[in-house]
Length: 245
Image (cartoon, rainbow, N blue to C red; front, side, top):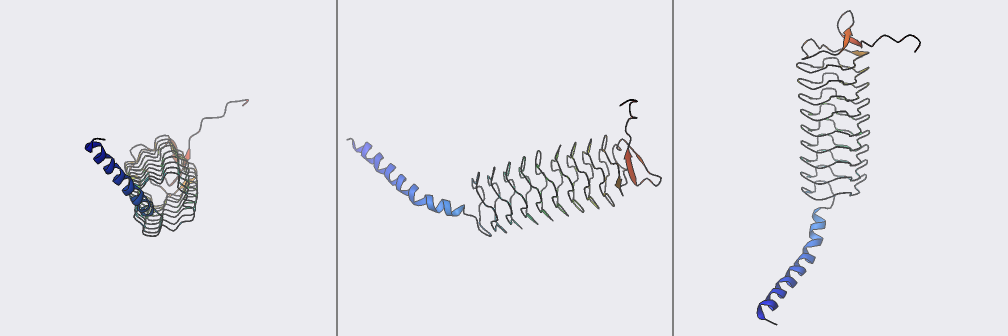
């Protein structure tokens, strides 16, 4: 056997041994724990149900279709993380940083994101019923067509957010900032909008029937609605019923 071939074989054997030695370390490096650094780890389909991941670093981590039900991610850094299709049922993300994260098709039923940073995050096709976004940074986030029944966004920042076609029936949006947001065809029936800022927001086609407390005098386009006598609550103008129907 030529010496060059024998030398190459030795190199590959050494590399193979090193890969075996390093593999457990790599696995340990991506093991969930409070404060763990899981940045850029591929955790696709991982089961982290009820795990304590407070303060963990998950920047750029891949968590597609992961199970994070009831997980505690308070204060975690998840900038640019891929959480598409993940189950985040009643997970806690209070004060976590989800800036630019992908949460498309994720289940966030009952999740807590109080004070979270989720600017430019993508929530399209996610399920957001009973989610707490109180005081969260959602500037320029995408919620196009999202189901957000009874969501709490009081004090949240949604400047430039895309909410077109979102279902936000009964939302608590007190003191929320919708400056420049796209709210066309948004359903906000029965929403609380006391102190909400709507400067430059596009509300064309939005349903604000039985909503209370908003002033859309500075909106880019008002909803297809009529204000009450003090201009503070709205009823969408519906077409007259067709006789015999």
